[in-house]
Length: 77
Image 1 (cartoon, rainbow, N blue to C red):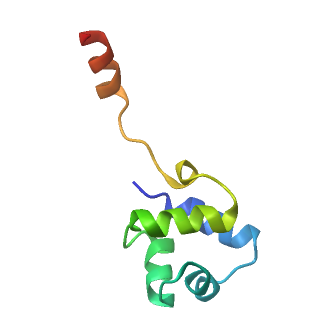
Image 2 (cartoon, helix red, strand yellow):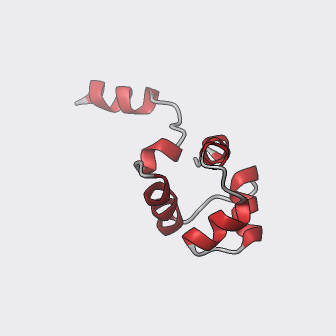
């Protein structure tokens, strides 16, 4: 799941508006706003553009779910 709070943190730290974000990653201002508020999830392509813009990996913007499934699968092998 996309971490919209992390996106807002990066926007604030870089003194960037949602309009500027949209222009830099190729989406409308409305879509940039939806991403920042958590109303929409980015496509993989948009997620990569966001990460590239801020010089980090896509993992920086992802919230991991329950890791118990991975542990269970490891124990079954």
